[in-house]
Length: 75
Image 1: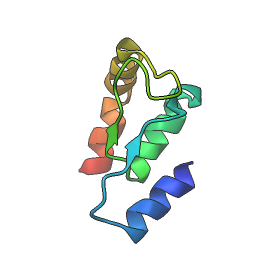
Image 2: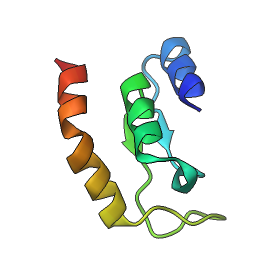
Image 3: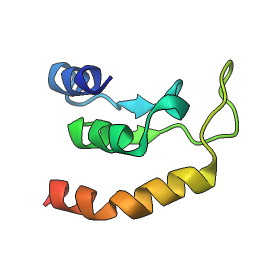
Image 4: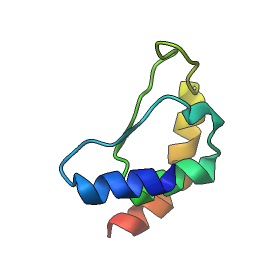
C-alpha cells in the first residue's frame, strides 16, 4: 500500500491521495509511512459504505504520536 501511495504521488502530483477503505487493518507505523510517502488526508467517519473505519480517538492518538515525524518530514 505504501508503494501505491508513493507511485500515485509521483504519477499524479496534484491529486489528493486519501487513506480510507481498509485503513482499519493498517498499523500506526504503516499509516505514518503512507503519510510520509505522500498521502495527504484520511476519511474520518464512523463507517464507510461497506467497511468499518477507525475511531476518531485512534486517529487522534496516531496524529499526536506521529506529529514529530510529520514535522521532520515537512521541514
